Amino acid sequence: MTEHAQTTDEPLRGTHPLAELFPPMTPDEFELLKRDIADKGILEPILLAPDGTIIDGRHRYRAGRELGYRDEHFDYNTLPDGTTDHELVAMALSLNLHRRHLTSSQRAMVAARVRPLFEDVLGDKDTITKVNSAAAKALQISYSLVDKAIKLQEKSNATQELLDMIDEGYITVHDGLYASQRDDELQLQAIELWKEGKLPSLKQCLKRLERENKIALVEAAEAPVGEYACLVVDPPWQYDRRQQDESQMGK
Image 1 (cartoon, rainbow, N blue to C red):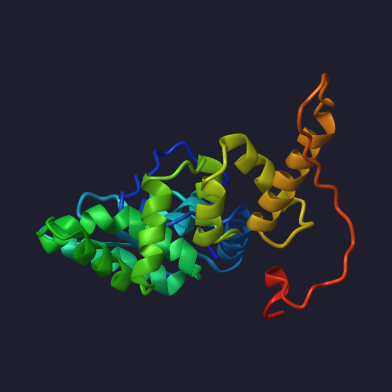
Image 2: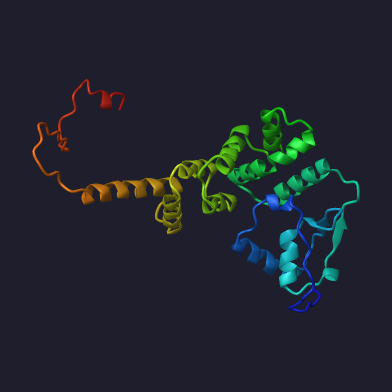
């Protein structure tokens, strides 16, 4: 490939908002791309919106710039003036879906973010179901999963760290919704526990932390002091199962 200087102070091109709807590559994925470009060059042109911002190829562009490429070293395809919003949305979704291996949860998060654009594309804001269904169809996922992602992003107590974990493909929307019902501190503790790799899912991490917290509260509780007319105690003990024990029926 052509040798490039390793540093350049040339201004960077901007990225079109549609491209930002999709989650960025993980650091490992980006490093692999960068190594591939260093070895083979950039094989696919960078696609630009009519205003000159990048609609597809932001990672290739960034990798090239970090390797010392100047603007003149890139091949660009620029969409013509007059390209409609509908065409831009369809193109951005199609290109990213075909080139990125995104999980269904990652696609649902994109669909939740892209939903307002479909209101403009459809020209009809009176039916939420219509808009959400269009986003689900475009991202090739179920309507119900899009609905869950919308609740997670717009109506839940999800921390930004939790949303980032879903965007990066580490946890599912379902686990994210479960975690978002907990306070911020517990969400962060569960994420750190999950990163240690000792439990397979964030939901299991949350359950362990909640159990440990309950045990800590019991151990820290002080014995009651004083005289009481009635004392109720429910200590655990082993007993034989009764034939009509409803808690054991069907097992």
